[in-house]
Amino acid sequence: MAPPQVADALDPDRVGPHPSYIEIARPYVFQHTITASLAAAGVSEAKDESIRLQGVAWIDSVRKYMQLPVKTYDTACVYYHKFRLVHPDSNGYIDAAASALFTACKIEDTLKKSKEILCAAYNMKVSPAEQLTPDDPLFENHSKTIIGLERLMLEASGFDFRNRYPQEILIKFAKRYNADKVTVGKTAYNISLDMYRTFAPLKQTTTTMALACVELAGRIHEKNVREIETGKEYEWFTSSREEVMETLLDLLDLYTHHRAATIVGQSHALEAFIAIRIALNQEASANSYPRFTRATVPKVAELLNGFKATNGTTGSKAKEVTPTTSPRNDLMQDITSPTTGASKPGLKEGTVRFMLDPQRAKAEKETVAEYFKVEKEEYEVEVERERRRP
Image (cartoon, rainbow, N blue to C red; front, side, top):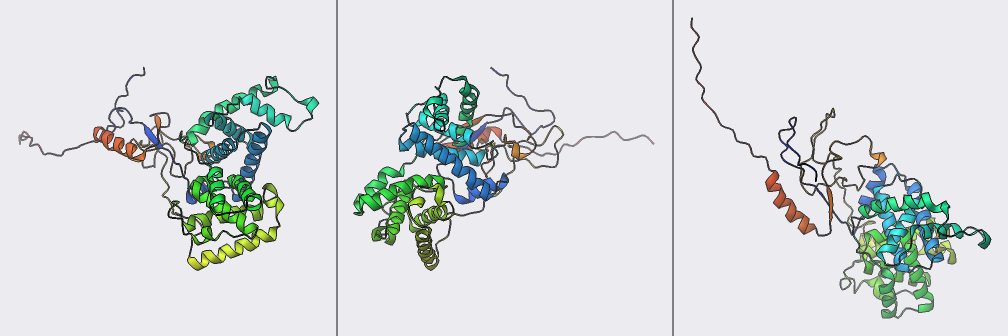
């Protein structure tokens, strides 16, 4: 058991041990946070799209080869996106994609060893005569790297295992609105798989994603689903036309710029997607829909973890020490990432704890803050001085 911390002689305002940090899970990550996280790491939009598409394509190909269910694919893609927002400077995409698939297999109870995943990725590219077994020494070092990234993968997601799967409810929507299962239904299902090549699964609810997939499939086959386009049941499904419109435009961005990297894009002409986009842009302009919902500009938090600058570090203002101050800033970037610059004071002090309930974290903050409140009193004391002799 470690000895309790004592008050620092150079910092009399700090009393007792650090109250620890609380990282609250984020089931939804909106566009302004995604953009700010990538901009803070110096990742351009073109580079982000390239790494994102390559990583998801790797996950998709390996999970098909291993015959894993679509739920594992959904979870792996979400974990891959969240990991890259926190660690955008990770080397390459294969390690992150393999670790995301390895973590998703555990979460979805489709257990696969890390060596089995690496072996499947290797055997896809070689002839049957050259295929290896998972026990081959070739995968030993790479397997250790993936296991090491698993912890960072879970921390990036806030240990939040509440995942969303739009495919099941998508099929129910297709039946509800009498969509043709051979054309609209099948295309909508493939769109739901392509959607994970975008950031839409991080931003939208399950019903919003399903509604957008069915509507886009109907527009592609010129069998529009009027019930979805008019939005009569959006309130019942806790969605809105603005959120569905944002998802549709995200998908059309993917199909117009990276059509060859998708499933549906290869089966339809580019002109079809452009025509749909023009119609949606006209609707958005007529109704003044924003391109991104809940778009706000967050304040950039300082990365000092509530400690005053010490050990030769000067010229910075520390944040207030509270149990909900996270080691990561509001842009979701990890302070242990090499792209954040020099080491920050207080990095090795305190403990990070993960919570799902923000109300519980708020209540704990208010309770703990009472014990770390520094109270000062000012009073005057009369002191008699001896008169000097002349």
